[in-house]
Image (cartoon, rainbow, N blue to C red; front, side, top):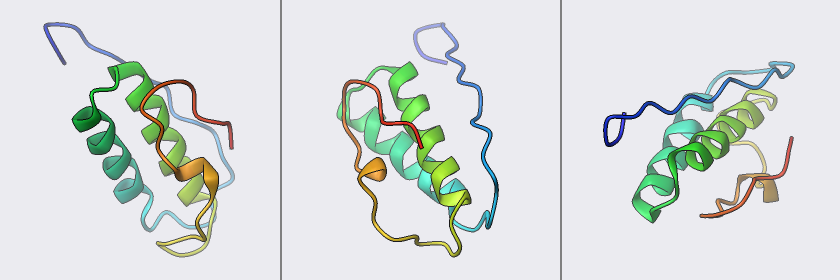
Length: 79
């Protein structure tokens, strides 16, 4: 809720291998985007993609992938 408006982003369907770290990835990208001044819809999409990606990998810290590097504007590549 920002300025009296809700922003929603549906989750991404992925084949889950391990959920450890998925929420942490979501929150990290969410906070980085909000602090960086990105719009809510973009921030939620990027955060959801990061969390979904981590859930498809084994372990809390999957290998670094370009998909997880945050960009303040524009769509994040699909996983």
